[in-house]
Length: 173
Image (cartoon, rainbow, N blue to C red; front, side, top):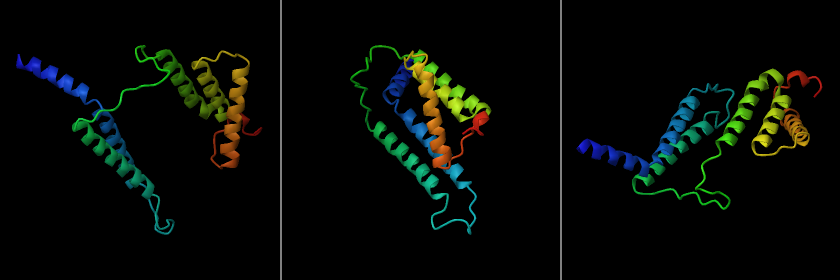
């Protein structure tokens, strides 16, 4: 009988301290960032006074610090405030159709970017996001999506110097 009581206590304790899951994720990300940062090769002649490891090590360390401070707060009884959005009805279930459509648009972009380039895959992403969020303008939405994608491509590729795959439009753009 005591094992049944122990299980109920464990479930209740875990439910009351669910924020510890966020702590675990933050700590795992911190460890991942630190391990990756420490493997960055540095050549003494090519680095300045700070070096390429400084920012990733700082970010990884801060992730671990935040995870530890949050865990301490949760174990001392701290709780996150419940969602109190103005336009959110918390009694309604989540809209999984929208989440799945947005995920599909994102995955389609990831799958198509190497094959068709950013201007086309970005158009699919922007139009898919507009469709998932409820817009049903069949002429306007793809045109706006194509415009946004082209502007994003030109800004990153030509102005900022961040190369994006152009796909079959690379000679045109």
